[in-house]
Length: 150
Image (cartoon, rainbow, N blue to C red):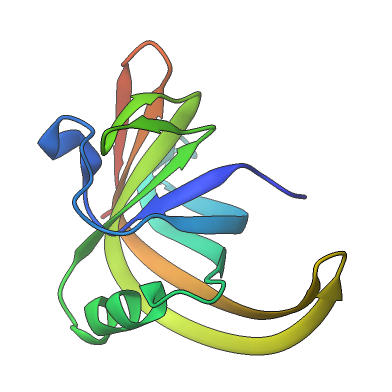
């Protein structure tokens, strides 16, 4: 499924939706949240959350910035915004999104040459799996719903 998603390597909600870093195109996004059940069978808090992202890095240098950040074993923010429109470096319109704080647990990079209508083009994709500490869902009305993972 193709989506119109953009990844920023920061928590964009903390700086009034004005990202300071590069925007990376999201090709595919999947997330899974598992919940445990308590002794009586009632659903408990989320216990595992993972986010799988496939990124189209194209021919730019966004891979270097992304790879440098994920080599560090600290918890990092990843903001994924859908149908994002930017004006003067600030996101002024979007449909929804999510901010994931977590650790990268797996990474696969692929490079290929594709022929298209305008000739040959280098394509670099990066598949990243993030084990999330928490996920904050954003909607068009500015509402936020945070899910913390134990």
